[in-house]
Image (cartoon, rainbow, N blue to C red; front, side, top):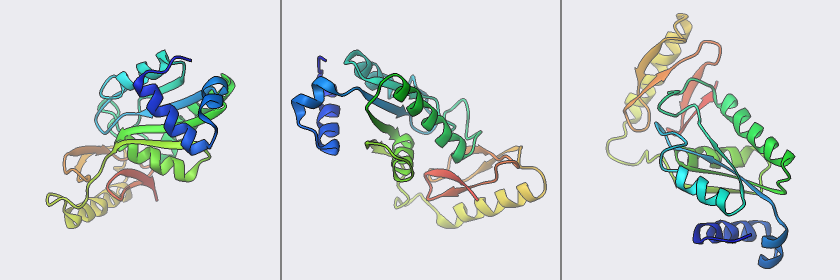
Length: 193
C-alpha cells in the first residue's frame, strides 16, 4: 500500500490506537474509515478531498451524507444516524476491513466522538470537531427556550412541521418529527428523549 502524507498521518494514528508495529500494520491491515461532513455540508464539501485521498491509498471509505447536511436539515433522529454509520461499518467488515474508524469534520467530528463512545470501533478521528458553546454569541437561555418550544410543538401534534429553532450557532432550521421526538443535546447533536 502506497502512503501519501495524509495516508501516513492516518496510518500513524491507527498504529498508535491499535498498538501494532508500523510496518506490519501497513502490510497486513485493511482499514475502513467512515467520514462525516459538518453541519450544513455534504460529502462533496470539505471532506471529499480526504475521502478521495484515502481511497487512492487503499483504505475502504464510506463518505456519508448525514442528517445534518444542507439537503436533509436534521430530518432523522440520532439513532437513525447511528444506524447509518453502523451500516457503513458492517459493509466495510464484509469487504474485509480488519480495523474500523469513524471520522468527521466539524459537527461530523462531534458525532464521531459521540458514536465512538457508544459503539465498538478501533478509533475516532475528529477533524476540527465543531461546537463552541463558550463563545459570546451562544445563549443558553434562548437555546433552552427553543427546546421548550420544540416540545410544545410536538405535544400539539406539529412535530413534522419545519420551524426555526436555536442551535449552538443560532442559525439552523430544524425539522421535528413527532415519531422521533428530539431535543438539542450539548449544542452538537440531536438526541432522542
